[in-house]
Image (tube, rainbow, N blue to C red; front, top):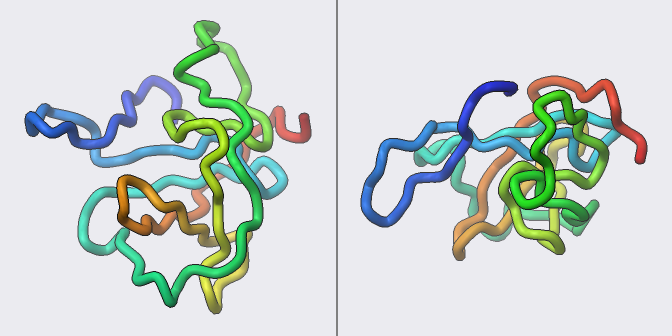
Length: 117
């Protein structure tokens, strides 16, 4: 989502957006995002094999508002974060990421025109 500030809720209870994007990550430039409600939490037995890992954290390196995310880019997830399949779901629709000790469900929501790098 261009123009949004997809930050996770902070410990001080700030006023963040309820969305967080893995921009153009993992599968053919498909954009995945998560929320931080109970519906985005997975049990460990729902988590499958590693299918990718984050190669670039966009917030650390990109100042260009016209930047197009590529496969492996993530808005806020640290470099090296493993991205997993969700048991029983195609990786083109749902992924799982362990964040701060909680498995989060990321769902496909669009595509990135500049994928493939």
